Every structure is written in structure tokens, then in C-alpha cells.
Image (cartoon, rainbow, N blue to C red; front, side, top):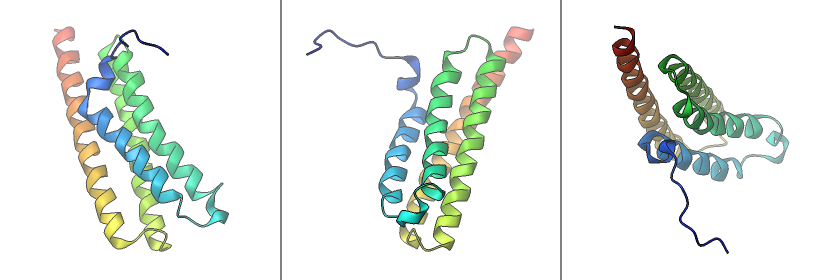
Length: 131
């Protein structure tokens, strides 16, 4: 068993990454209830998109230039919008209850707002470097 203290990476401290990680779990749990014939369709698509959000936050924060950091946060935001679309479709198809959809939508909105805040902070730092 590994007993030495593990390093904490900077992305792990970000509230937006922590919230996106929880959303990955929620998406996996909800998609377990989708019809079997969606396994390679909507289930796979929404899971991969949600994983992309947290992965791009992690990768983006590791980049040295603010321009690169911003780009990865934009990619994460795009993937989050893909998740939102998939959830809307899942609701339309009645794979997700209205109550669960609302809960997930509130969590998605929170992550979207936090991604926008992180991007603004990188923008601000990028502008300081340019001066």
C-alpha cells in the first residue's frame, strides 16, 4: 500500500474541476438507466463529453501560456454545452425525469458560470502579460 503523501495538482484545488468531477459521476449514474440500445449512442456521447470537461480543465490549467489556458477552458465549455444538449435530448426522449433534468441543469449552469469566471481570470492575466 502506498503510504507516502500524494501531490495535489493545481487543478484539483479548483472548485470548477471538483464540480465537473461530481457531474461526471452524476452523468454515469443517470445514463446507467438509459435503454440498452443507447449504449453506443447517447450514453457514450454524453459520458465522453462530460469527461472532456474535467480533462480539459485539468490540461488547460497545466499550460504555461494564458492563451493556451484560455483555449482549453473554451474547449471544456464547448463540451459542457454538448452535455447540456444531450441532456435536453434525453429529457425529450423521457430517459431523464423532469426533476432530475432540473437538478442536472442547475449543476451544469454552475459549472458553466465557473468556467466563464476562470476564463475571465486567465484573460485578465493574459492582458497583464501583454502590457
